[in-house]
Amino acid sequence: MTKKMFICKRFTELMNFIFVYCCIVVVYILIMKNIIKILILFVCCSVFKAQQTEVSVVKYEDLERRIQQEKDKLLVVNFWSTTCGPCVKELPHFMEVNTKYADNEKYKMILVSLDRLADQERVLKFIKNKNLTAEVLLLDDIKRMNTWIPRFEKDWDGSIPVTLFYKNGSKIHFNDGEMSKEDLEKTIKENLQ
Image (tube, rainbow, N blue to C red):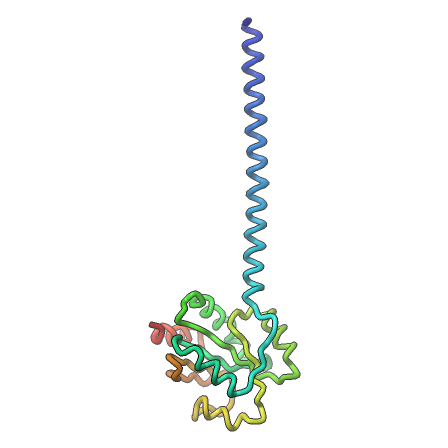
């Protein structure tokens, strides 16, 4: 084999190696792009799946039963409305805290909307727009407010927002008015064990 043939053979091998290497890099880049796309799709689906697609309409008795079903948990129940400025203002803090504790099986948050039944579609749009990940119920029992409000808390005058905390099915804390993220988190930490 001559020196020229040897160099040509080595050059061909080198070019083949570079070609294969480039193909591997291109395939790797395409795979990584697809993985990133798949991850983005997964995250988006998870977020949309976490949001409700319909709002359950309940009466007072249904809500009372729902609270009693969560006996083994610290249950945070927030009464709010889409037309209540302080309610809307505090909801992002509630969602931050809810996300933080969502994986804790001893914790649950329920948002009880006091909007009118006729505004159910608006409530659903609000849930989607504000990315509310906690369970949302629409309490359609306005005619009996004077009956059920004192059953939740004797000192509650009916104004919102209001947040109640239950542990083992019993009320342990009542917060009348807007609740800061710090106070919400403090109350949860003190009672979540």
